Image (cartoon, rainbow, N blue to C red; front, side, top):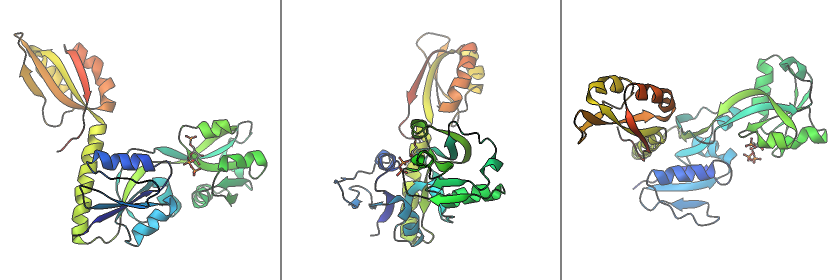
Amino acid sequence: MSKLKIAIQKSGRLKDDSLALLKQCGISVDNGRDQLKVSANNFPLEIFFLRNSDIPQYIEDGVVDLGIVGENLLYEIDSELDVLRSLNFSKCRVSIAVPKNSKFTDIKDFEGKKIATSYPNTTQKFFKSNGVNTEVHAISGSVEIAPNIGLSDAICDIVSTGNTLFNNGLKELFVIMKSQAVLVKQPKPSREVNSLIEQLNFRIGAVLRAKTSKYILMNVPNANIQKVSALLPVLKSPTVLPLAEEGWSSLHSVIDEDDFWNVIDQLKEAGAEGILVAPIEKIIE
Ligand code: PRP
């Protein structure tokens, strides 16, 4: 029987969240320290821990079937791999930053300037598309230090919290792209492997959907059920159960976390009381 092979980061910002996602999909692994390959106990899956920058090539060659990488890496290498879905974690930006006292404000100020980066292609593409010629210095890490030691006038790097920029006396000037972790698939999986990819992708979908949704319960006077229901973008239609107190019902629904705060005042105005909001573990549709 075939096993699905998935590559995740050996170390770095995507690793823990990638493993956590697999766990939430009900996949259990015994991750021994320093092991580069582990097998799942309860799903035909092997996990390969690889260097981030090597993962796209392994997928391209079909050595592994799936991989979890940052969208920004795919952009950097002009990858044409199929992105199955965004995973809603490791969100960051790829940005141009300059020393905080720099007078640069306009992109044209960068003409002929030196930019240090671990993402030379992304940097080149950005300035080129804006008609600005720069000198790009590719370095593999600690990019934020480059302006302080006179290596460059600016940097292009990943920004997440912004702490690294702040701690190195830099400020973000332009955001080139927003990025997050994505699930990528090999170009020509066998039928058997493709069916396993679909199974795993289905589980991931259920987990991600649940993460951004909340279960919401409230007490509503019967006369207002229609009004309250109309405010809730629900999966199908809300569940309405009679309360012991006559004339009242308990209304249950699922709501997108982002919609919740927008709708809460309207729910109260429409007569909802005792509103409870609870996390959801999985949503199977
Ligand atoms: C990235 C990037 C910055 C840092 C930014 O490094 O190179 O150094 O994250 O994050 P922040 O805005 O939250 O401070 P990463 O930790 O991914 O490791 P790397 O140096 O190997 O790229």
